[in-house]
Image (cartoon, rainbow, N blue to C red):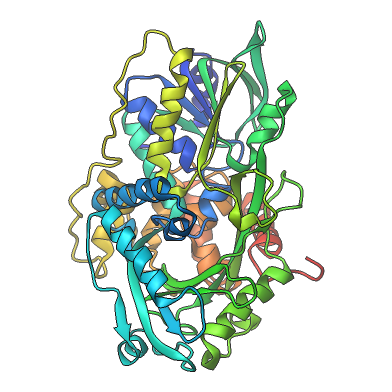
Length: 526
């Protein structure tokens, strides 16, 4: 049983076949397109140069939200679309996409004012087809957020959105696509696009693990490479259109900033929204929104300035907590694929998705995690001219079939639904595959040891960071990036992946070096 695609030994025969759709990029956008293409009768292949969800889709703010802040810009259609997709995901994937209440303190002199905020929430509710109480008195708000700043507090506002594990969302979508006949292969990079008469007809792919190259023919080639989309477009002479923006985040231990509600505020320096919320047994703080001036061929990392910015927001909202850099377990930073319209303030750039069909290459970029299904359907609509003879109404379908949570008396409370959300129909098999004592939670997380074994066995793990940063999130949820857990992780990897001692040592060294550079506090000068 595999979750996403074929064993690597079968790549030569697989890639020699003709395909209807070749999708380049293994984030949420590419995964969504693969699912919608496969379930609608197209022979579809997705390839990813690194690992699934390696880029933005494992380093987002983890929020499945309706874009409340876009209302003040008059972007009602974008908000309506996102709110409806949020509600659809909440219904289809309980345990993976979960409701999250947000609290916003009403302080004397702080913006936005109470009336403005409540008006926006009334519109938000109407778009979502629901109605709830939003305003709470000073004492009620202090009970909801006991560690919030007290000076000037007049009351508070609460509203509902949702959160997820973004990498696991990508993997669940890929699993569903595989069940419909879609094929996804990681560590398979695109060297060049193939053309006939100036039009794209496929790509020359390279196995990043052994260097073998494969020409692949496809009727439609779709670039879903997010912030990296211009790199595939510009060799053909297309002008760059993207403005990669970096969003950085902090992970704190839950005991250091215990929150029952998510807390949102406007940063005292520039008025941008900042949040802190409970996530996967820790507290997540984000986010920044600045131009990414570094090279695009590596991983993003938080800078000292961004760390100081987020800590300043925490000091402003939670002064009694006296939080400092030493409290940070881990950091992560991702690049947002934002369409460049030349605005001086990066935060003012629109978050709509865009599609460009240029000489047979369809580029899909921009957009939000929440609206990946809408983006996928728009992409297939735009690809119709490349697929003569294919007909489909492209009516929206539920992203997932909602499985019955598996029952096992050994599972800790809440884990049955959590596993059902993340693994769908494979949740029961994951439990059955667990070794002795592996249906226990890894301290400081909500992850079971059995999830590591399942991932190593069935989820195309090629490197240690695949397992600890994306299949599970141990690398950002535990201090030292999970260094103290590497003993039992080694036993799982060497058994399931057949790694030799030398391979394990090499993987460990590479993983710890990666975490030091990109998932820890900023190094001097970064």
